[in-house]
Image (cartoon, rainbow over the protein chains, first blue to last red):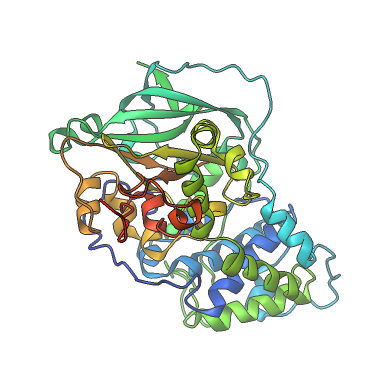
Length: 218
Length: 235
């Protein structure tokens, strides 16, 4: 979706606000919500990915709220979308009367183990690679209203494949539990001037990791 | 009644064949009309998060002590000291450096570092002619096992927006001037790869121990927004 989250290339966001000696969390609730997100994710029962609910936050809200407030939005929407929580329960703060208590909660060791385990997005499958290192490609010009990892700023631009990372599940469909569509991800180098024009330094470049479905032959 | 963003989204997502339609806007009882176009965002996130934790524990979806254990990992077990050890090893051990650049995931695995956001770690090397800088324009991707959780500025709109279009300006703003003779490579972590910059070893540190070198390596140098300096080096 062409949402506010896809902000590469915008120029009006102000100065970078750097903080010296930054703590891991600025408030206890930030750690709690982040841990809740990971603990629930670790059960493997969520049917919606982390990012779509964040990306669907209306732009003004997206810019106003903090990073960890977005996690609150995401985990509650994911739980609801996965049938593990109802909106009524969220608003009331207590389980539906008579509802059965789940046994999904992970123990401390299981929660940490689930988090430390590599998320299984790589697939050892003999999916043919459409492109080889050195090939010239163009990022497709398409604008899905759903989740994608193809930023707006690179659509229609041409670059060169520099590496084949192997086969991974396709985020655009897997985040909605709409199928894994395993395919190659390539590291693609784009000359900065191809993307940004003459104002960019002629020797500079931007590298993106792009799924096979995002690319076409030049 | 005007069409709300929620209606537009629902329609579009349905049209796109998406079964799971995220409904983001909470129509609460206290709203006096139904055209709210905003998130029902907590006025006090701390209270909302506490209420959610209580609810999820009551529903059997979360164990409080598991949250404590996870927070302990974020606060004490992962962080940029991990990455600094990897960088220092690469500076003193050419064979390790070769493995690191070829397969970052396997090489940092030699230290026991793995996990969330670290599925596919790629290490890119700064040299006298190449300077690398890492960003995630779409969200907050970061090489978690070696750097820990990202700082706020890395996840912020100004950095995400500008790092790709004006990396030299961003670097200057953050205190690093990159000469025009050097190629700047921006790595936008858009998919499953997570990037760690291998900074240049400072001059005058030839006889330094791995441990002493690791103490020089900053988080920012491994994101690519700073260089490593050696205050006590003999140059």
